[in-house]
Amino acid sequence: MNSRNAIVVGGTGNIGTAVTRRLRAEGLRVVCASEDVTQESSESMRVDVTDEASVKSLFDRAAAAGPLSLLVNCSGFGSFTPIEETSLQDWRKTLDVNLTGTFLCAREAFKRMKAHGGGRIIHIGSVSDHLTLPMNGSYAASKHGVRGLTGVLNEEGKAHAIRATLLSLGAVYTAFWKSRPEFSPADMLSVDDVAECIWEIARKPLHIRVDELRLVPPKGVL
Image 1 (tube, rainbow, N blue to C red):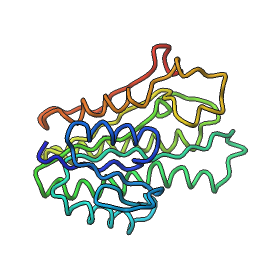
Image 2 (cartoon, rainbow, N blue to C red):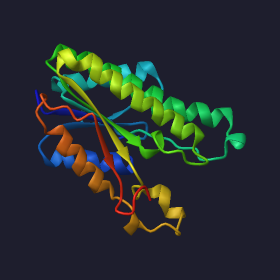
Image 3 (cartoon, rainbow, N blue to C red):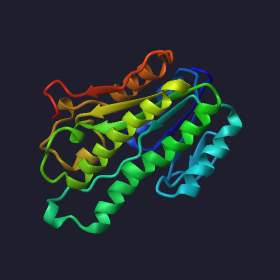
C-alpha cells in the first residue's frame, strides 16, 4: 500500500461494518461512509452515493488524512420481484445505488489514486451477475454493470498501478435473511468471511492484480 488510508462506502451495513472493523484491526485509517451516519467525524462521514456532489465531498474531506490507497464499495440495495411486478421506482433505485453509486465512488478514487501512485478498488459483486435467477431482474442488471465497470477500471488503471477487484458473493448471512427462517445461517458465509477476503486482497502489493474472486458457501450459491 502507498498509504494506510482507506474508505469503506456502505460502512454501516452488515458487510461494511465487518470490513471497517477488519481493516482498522490491521492498522489502516478507515473512513466509514454511509447515508446512515448521523454523527460525523474524521473516521465517519455521511454520503449519498447516488448524488455526485455528496460523493465528491466525501472524497475531498477524506483527503485530509493523506493519499487514498484503498476503496471498498459495499453499498447495496435489492428489490426482488418478478419482472412484471417490478416498478420503475425500484428499478431506478437499484441501479442508482448499486451501479451509479459504485461508478461515482470509483471515479473519485481513481482520480486520486492516479495522482498518488496507485491503489486498490474493491467492489462487492454478486453471483447474480453470471447466474440467471428469478425475481432478480433489477439486481442482476445492476451487478452485471458493476462487473463491466470493474473490468474497465482495470484496463484504464494498468499504467497507473490502480487495481480493481470484483468480489462476487454467494449468500452472506445479513439482516436480510432474518425474516427467512427457512434459510440457515450455517449454510451461508459470514460477514467476517467476506471481510477477511477483502483484507487479503487489500494487503497484496500492487504488482499483483486480483481481477475477480468468487466467494460462495460450501453448498454453492446457497
